Length: 339
Image (cartoon, rainbow, N blue to C red; front, side, top):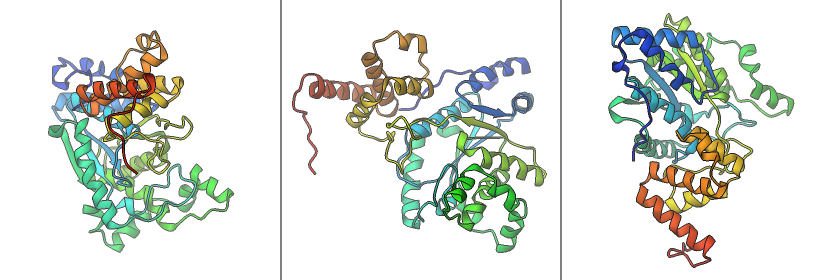
């Protein structure tokens, strides 16, 4: 089921001022925009020239499932699509071989080509539960990096310094703890930045932990004579433990392909505080109305909304009934998994 976000089509504006009125919706739920003035200018030019902006977001296929943490960004991408723009959904099948060091306290384990291909194939089907296929370009960065010569790679590396890369907080934390930093991790930010150059991105979206990489994309575009992309950062969604960000590697996530019964149970297990956080970042519900509900009722409503979005209303109703039978009425579930 495709998520329908409330927004206005780009073509409905009668003037650049009407287009700027869309900024409030774009800003909702973001952590930082660099810069807001540049975003305004891009929207106005896009309107005047009837040219959709190119909105980029990258995902490394490190696991087969996209989770609710990813949907914070995907929902914002869909919002841009509903305004008439084009989304560049970048699958980092090359960069996944390195692993993004952002927010990591140690190097990621290497992935096999088979795992990367298998995971990437699942992403293509999952994203269309949110994104509009007609306004989405799915691209793979192995297509250009696999053809890059060692000469071109070393030329690309000359656009950043060791002192610049080592200054990032996650690397500083590793140095303090005497944990290794691999050379290929050093060049990861440059590779992500070059993706923006190759795709000529107007805007790039990412989590707050991606700030270094996103800003480097602006610098590299400037070096290559392109107009700098606007950077839009979104908050990181906490996982089921309410401490760490939702992560496949930590196992504290709810996959959008998760079975409805499992999804319902996981939502019901979170704290009330985290529930309101999920409402803010994963739905369009009015928070005053949500907070007027009893927490248990609000949590059930959240589970229903999420399952309806990624499965169906019927699946949500069935999951709700199954949960109540087991946990409220103490009955034996109809389906019991064997282990």
